[in-house]
Length: 182
Image (cartoon, rainbow, N blue to C red):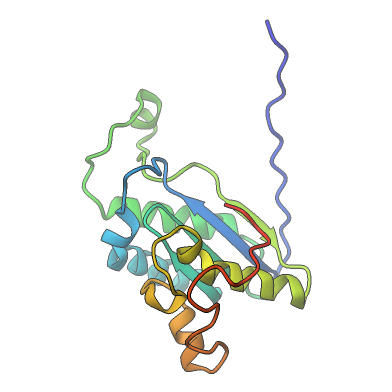
């Protein structure tokens, strides 16, 4: 029998921390579930944010995954709770149409989201800007649009209105540096 080691996921929890997250659907091929049900996803985020506050610096929703940069309150480091609640609130708002394993059925779990998510604690201003830019360029990177401004499910438009980005930021393609991969 082959020896293998179970991954040891160690998360860094820092009260008041600013984090970059990637959250994926279980099935990422041929689905537009997140954009198709964007109102339900926004409602889930709003509901969780009301009870467990956080500040959204950047967010983009793509058909099968999302990226965001969030800041937690100074006395709170529990981003895992927030993601569990966002994912479960969204999932419960959808009819059960997906196939589920016996284990998921027994636990009352849906098969919509991957169980885990990827997080990165933002280290400094340069790291922050790189991740916020990555969030906004992502629809272009995935070939969904040619210009960042053309993707509707993004905080890019709010940041343009605030003067943070010019409307034509990143030009008409992948002119921006993409330091991180999905």
